[in-house]
Image (cartoon, rainbow, N blue to C red; front, side):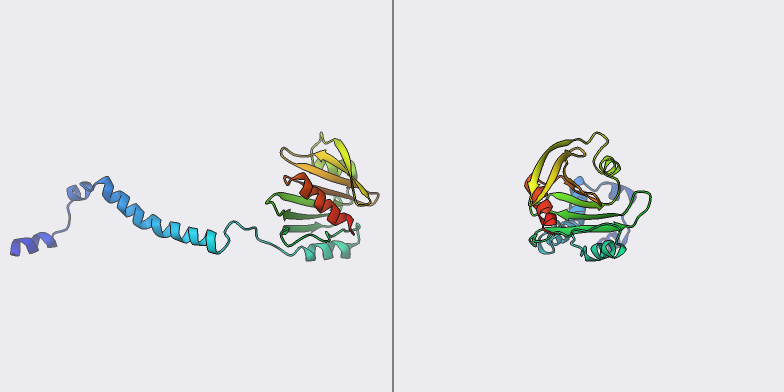
Length: 187
């Protein structure tokens, strides 16, 4: 019995540690990875891990209106499945005053509404591309909007008015771009 007790008390040698099999390493990794995967799965399923984080664009709209540098349109009549995710107002500077509000659409697409008093040719080059050209028009309410090709994978609806320009640009389907333009035209 004493021989067995003394063997149990001696620390493992380097050669016995090296003799561990890949199976032992796989089991050790599984013990670490299983809890991590369970926590990640619970986050995705129960806490909506892929849902966009909604923000309140109200302060950006209020700031733009208070500055009085351009007329501001806020979308009217959009459902709760339109999620605002970013809203920034930049007052007049070298690029002119600009209000940007980004949305995740009901189908999961992305679009951005840009309202600016910047001269239209400069704005179109900056926001779309230097080769952006009108590709047709569409009547949205009482307003005529122009279709433009934007950056790769994106389209834009553009309304050029005397005091400001409004762009609805993104990778969202055309019907959602048009729905946003209609919501802005309702003002």
